Length: 273
Image (cartoon, rainbow, N blue to C red; front, side, top):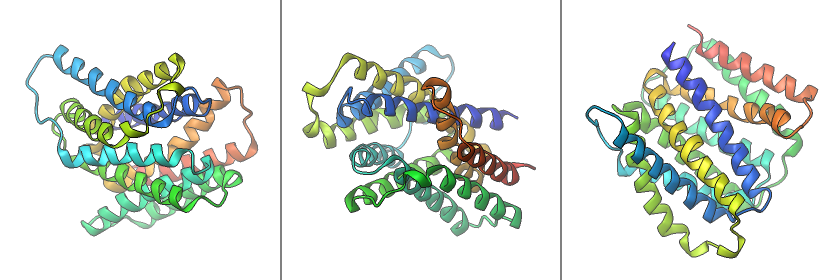
């Protein structure tokens, strides 16, 4: 029950990340490198403050390997954001996440049953149905970067399955990733494109949806197999689309309803005991 609750909260946080990023970058309120840097830095500050406030010993503090994966995700995703359309980007990103996490599980001995494969097929079918109208031929460089972002996120998620202290691990990963991302992206920052609204969205995205959200995800991961941890993330595009219908007054279409049904059915088949 605890794992299910934490997983649900993490998926809501991931969908919130998408909406906040879309609101900031889609409306040209801030340039992508500045958004990524502020996002990671605000997450690092928030998690450091939470560590100071809590009582009890700190177990572990992240690793450079996980931090490199997190920074790689932030850098690659930021660079690809303006080069790849939303539909194509979602397919490339989540396809790479699935391939990385499921492939690693298979190599390390996980043997999903027939029901799990059916669940994966349904969920992927729902993602394709949701994103297909927006799929266009991507710029090759953008496609490579988005796939790289998915691989890095898959690696970061896999690293979280062994975290003894989710808050300490995520806090350590965030401050390291902030340094790495700063070194990579500071040369591309455009201060003249930064607005107060864009900074606010980046801070909220980093402090809550990313910092706290990724901590919750690390808390859920030890209770999930690699297969299930990868599959449940296919709910994020659907949650994002459903939230947009409420927050952005978008219409619930038959396509969205069908995609939601397929993804939910596929995840349920795979995760139910």
